[in-house]
Image 1 (cartoon, rainbow, N blue to C red):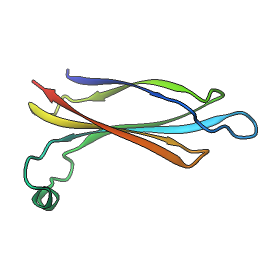
Image 2 (image 1 turned 90 degrees about the vertical axis):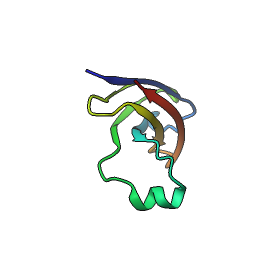
Image 3 (image 1 turned 120 degrees about the vertical axis):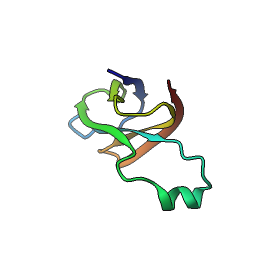
Length: 103
């Protein structure tokens, strides 16, 4: 069984007056499409991406989470792993993308 593991950290989450934080994390794995950007959008296959989303609460302004994405049905090749952390108290988000390769 194939799996993609990722680790993320977030800093500076905003706290409610009660001292709690609330956030969600979204990780999406999408195949790299090497066609020109207009063609890629036009011919993008539905269901080509896979991902995971979950939420959390705490009393620290910093978080650290491990993520696991099942990649069993993914073909060999290059993919983009996009990770988004949403601060639900501050109503802000940060996002990063990294290219990964499956053999």
